[in-house]
Image 1 (spheres, helix red, strand yellow):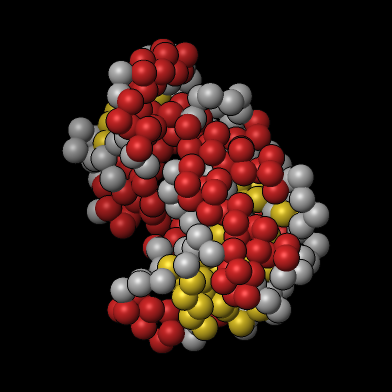
Image 2 (tube, rainbow, N blue to C red):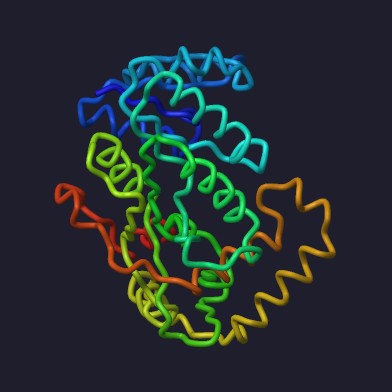
Length: 294
């Protein structure tokens, strides 16, 4: 099969390219004209075919999509990318006769969340409405939060303070999936002609209490639990922060957007999981993730 990957030069997109090539796929890496040569060389060295286009040119995008079995989008950005650029890519895929499209969702299952509570999810929801109005077969991969974030200091897990934070309930679980696990699953899904509209996965589902225990065992230091308040208070805090920061609307990850991710993370849990759909995937454990920080 031939799979076109948009956003192939990015950290996550590059992992999808690698996973597809490992599975024997022909990979067409769609890149913006003018992309730095070292990034292109890296993809070429892996074995990908490079297709450089003007992402605003529908004709070039359509040619790039010719004889492609599935388009995978790993594009990242705001409305101009997630809605506008992806829509042009989708239209081009349909014009070229591509049967399947995997959009750049890769997040908490926002279909289970109300609109207006997470800006970046609302952009994906807008694109979802458009793609679902077309004839193409779409599949979204919902993986919760990227587990790689746990190696950084954040309210949920702070290595410097040796604490894990929680809102409402220290036993409320959240979905986490490593980038490599998501990439592997996405590659399998791209090569699977029978995928449903939504696939839900998680390397692990874990609560703040369990996270504190795992961090304590991995580091040899006791991590304590800290009550961060109510989830409703976090939501109100995020709304106030967004209202007070109009410039943040032009930033991918303003402070209030980070808070919205935390709020969303503990508002819905993937159930049931589709982890077993591709049995060859070896799912990463929370301790394996935390060991990278140590």
